[in-house]
Structures are given as C-alpha cells and as structure tokens.
Image 1: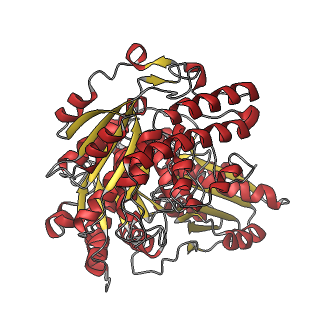
Image 2: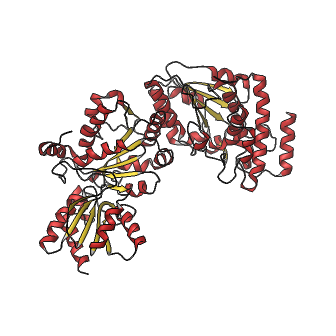
Image 3: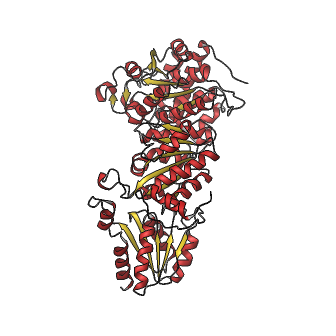
Length: 275
Length: 324
C-alpha cells in the first residue's frame, strides 16, 4: 500500500501551495469566474483529510478498504482539486485544465471520470448518499470509514437533516461529517440570513457525537478527525473564515463566485506567499 | 414460477402493489440475497409487510423522507452494484424526489429501481398530493431511465422482476386498487421494450398502458359491436418505446389512439406523438388521458370519468374521432 502521511508542518506547507493553485485556477477561469472564497475556507480541512486522515492507496485508487470521501460543498472545488493533485491522484499540471471545455476539472460538479466516490453536484444530496454507503459497509462488514464534507449554509437544504436523522438512527459510527462553518452563503452572513445557531448542539440533539474546532488549525483538525466515535455518527464543526488567506476576499460576499483579475491575482499570491 | 388461473385470480385480489411486493419481490429476495428494499415509512403502504417479516435485514426504512430514501438507495447500491428497490407512492417517490432520481439514477446510473405505487388516481379522495399523473413525463425526460407500467397484478409481478434484469435505473409504475381487474388470464411473455398485442383489428390501433389497458380492451369490444375493428396493445414499456411495433401499426391503421391514466403531455401519448411526428405521413393520433388539468376528486372511477377514461367514454371518443 502506498500512502504518504504528512506531518503538521508538511500540511501547513501544502495549504500554502493549495491556495496558490486555487488562485492560478481562478485566474485561468477568466471571465466565467470561480468559486473562490468558499474554497479558501476549507483548504486546511481538505489538506488534513487528504494529507493525513483518509486511508487510500495512491497506486490503487479503487482499493476496496479505502475510506470513502463524499464531497459536498460544491463551491469548494478549488480546494478539492489541488488537494488531490498535491497527494498524487493526478499530476499538478492537470489543474491547468480547470474549466476547459469538456475538461476533467469543472467548477461545481465532480466528474465521474475522476474516479471519485460520488460525483456530487447539487447541494444537499451528498449526506443521504453517504448514509447509504456507511450503512451497506456495516451490513457487509466492510472496513472503510465514510467522510462527508458539507458547507454550513448547505445545511439549509432539508434532505441533509433527513439524512442526519437516519445516520443516528442506524448508529453509523463509520461516518464522519465535517461542516465548514464559515458563516457565509451567497447573500452574506448566514446568521443574518438564515441562522444556523449552534451547530454542535444541533448535531448532539440529533444523536450525533460532535465537536467544534478552529477549521484553520491543522493540529485541532488532525486531532478531531483522528477520533473514531462509538455507536453514533460524528460531526466535526470546523469554524472557518470564508476567503481565508487573502485580505480582500475574506468575509467579502462578492467573492463567492467572482472574476479574479491580474492585479488581484498578484496581490493574492503575494499575501499567500508572505503568510 | 408456475402460474395458473387460480394464482392469477389471487394476484388480482392483492392489487398491483400487493402482488409486486408480496410475490415478485419475495421471489427476487429468494434468488438474490444482496437485494435491498428502501422505504419511506412505506412498508405497509407498499404492501411489504410479508416481505419485511421474511427479510427484515433486506429492508431499510428511511423514514418519511423520500429524497433521503433515494440517496440512501443509491449509496447502498454504489459499492457492488446490488439491486436496490425504493418503494412508496408514485407521487412521492418520483415527483417529490425528482432531483435525487435525476442525479443518482439518471446520471450515476446506480442500480436502483423506483417502484411507484398507486399512480394515476388510485389514491382517490386523498387527492392531488397523492395522485401521480405527471410521473411518466418526469421519468421519460431523464436519460438512462427504463420505464415500466403494469396493466394488472400479474404484469406488476413481471415488471418488478424484469426490472431486476436491468443493470441500471428503472421506474416501475404500479397503479389501481385491490382487486385489480385481470388483463392477462394466463401466463405471458414479458420483454422490456416489446409491446404485447392483446387484440387484432385493422382500422384503429389503441395503445394503452397501466390500468387503461383493461378499459381499452372493453372499449374495443364496444367499437367492434359498432363495426369498427380495433387492435389493442399493452405498451408496458414506455421507455424505450417499442417503435418496431409502432412502425407496423402505423402502416395498417386509419386512426392511432393512446390511452393512459396520466397527463396527455409527456407520457405515453407524448412519446407516441413525438415518434409519429418525426416519421411523417402518418394516420391521425388521438391522445386520451388527463387533459393537462387536475380535475375533481372522488373515487377511482369517478376520477376516470372526469377525464373520459372509462371504457364507454373511450369507445365514444374513438368513434367520434374515427368518423371525422
């Protein structure tokens, strides 16, 4: 089995490179724009998952015992694609094909052709699929663990909660969900638009084990995601900043999907390099 | 399974969904231990009590959450391609959960069979929320979907069993009540995509599906008595449509008629109309079905009457159109 486990320092360095890749891809998307800020909020989450947590064999991507990762939060492809490139799922050069006609890497959907566990493409649909995957693993005594990443505003979609109920009911302790709690959706601050309040308490009330961490703190993420619950599913609420790492993008709703011009690109790259 | 007239009568008493679940799916579970059934608080609703008592470990209840039910079904099937049947009212499973069907079944092509019960007006006075008269149109517009529609209880058994042979998504439309009138009085060959001709006659071809097959047969009797010769065909597969049959029927018929317990837009009538329009130089087509409205609520036959779907109404309409 070929799986490189990164140290916290290596993951930190990977995050920096991932942010730079994200800027390259946003620039390459040109006038179509890219989902920039929601990707920047979950760079650390993706880096920790792919760098240290998910069990996989880079030489055999369909290895039966690999952990399954269901990627919700479709607006985070600029974090997803660089994480996979950094860990060797495909060469980093493939990132250059972002948003090309019939390209492998597109702005919202994960294409089936990537060999992902679920070609997710629509908010609110991943959680029930993850429940089905975790449930059949229990029934057939498979070893894999199912991880699912959701956005906090994505949890405004009702079916997410249908699946949360089912996961607890079926005691799916082989299921971990990470909620990127960046407190922003397209129109602005979630707590003003549609308040999610205390998501950890909500998950606990739904019968899940839950913890809240700083979603940009590698150590906290590593610790929280290394934990395997017993008898119930597990939710990690990762408090983050939408647009993290680029000053003019942070907490600025205009950058949910936006066009990055050359000058902004240069400034962003400089900020990331100097961070 | 050896099928004799006594069994066929017993199936008829069970209704389409009762026979499909209690006979067809029971048989499938015997043959395929990997098979799973997902319900949305619909064990009883989908007549799965006997199935559940025999195979509790095969059944996953998603609770009253049809969208999640489809997602869970897809997840269950995703690892090894096992067949998963998702069963509840047609109105909820298809109409309410359409995006989940679109992505998980049509796009991903997971091996999930959606069994929509009590389609058309079978839910009677529970009314519009529980009726399904748009479901075929919705399923037809999705790529990769096979659509089956049962004419009677024996056909319902055949539909759920044939669906298992397809390695991919299928929508099985079941309709009617308990004591479902018999169309097939003896065992018959059910092949997906191959229409069953039930009656031969050269002047009018009546293409029916679901509960309307029986009404169409009765309408044909009335028409023959008035000197109008009719063919009646059970178009149990709406997608892929049996265009070979249509090609033959179009040559000999003076009038083509479709009959369905569904909106005339997008269903069987829509499918046949689209095919005929592209062929060109064809006999006229009359689509009998729900006329793009909801209509008054009442018992099944009353609902049919509101849309001209009873045998005498169908015969009357065809006679009028034939003599135009």
